[in-house]
Length: 208
Image (cartoon, rainbow, N blue to C red):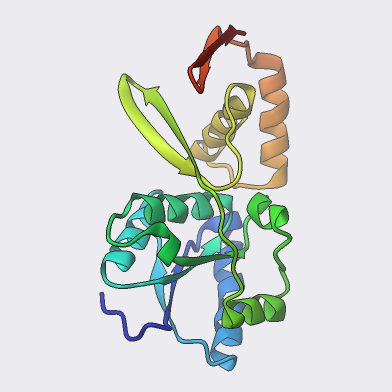
């Protein structure tokens, strides 16, 4: 992996995002970026977790400008790559998202544009703002783990909806708003609140 110049953007593309729409959207985006004379190189994801590893590797090789092309899942993975690397402070990285996912919640929070030309101008002008990043620690299958999150953290019922979505995708479904709505209703019928303990700043809250 070779970084050609300090102004070059490393673009991590998830071609499977939004049921494959990301690949078609990227063809349009690439043409617009070239017309604007924005220097970039492309890294493609092939499976879950690739975006995290690609971001880490790119930063180790000197990348300071990273653009993800995908949805909230791709966004989440790239942010974890930026935060998990220890080559440079995370505040040295200029990061952006070209939104082509189903929900695109993060860009709505910041009211980022979805129009191609507006996105290109934002990237070319390197408009940015500093954002806080959250971190959650948890246990899964007896192993202590942690994840960074850039937008929201969902637990309990919200997490069960995601589980139902993943079960649908594992059984051959394709990600869509309908799949998410179906998972929401299944969770309403099936989910039972467990006994939970939440620790915040030394306080413990126990409840269902």
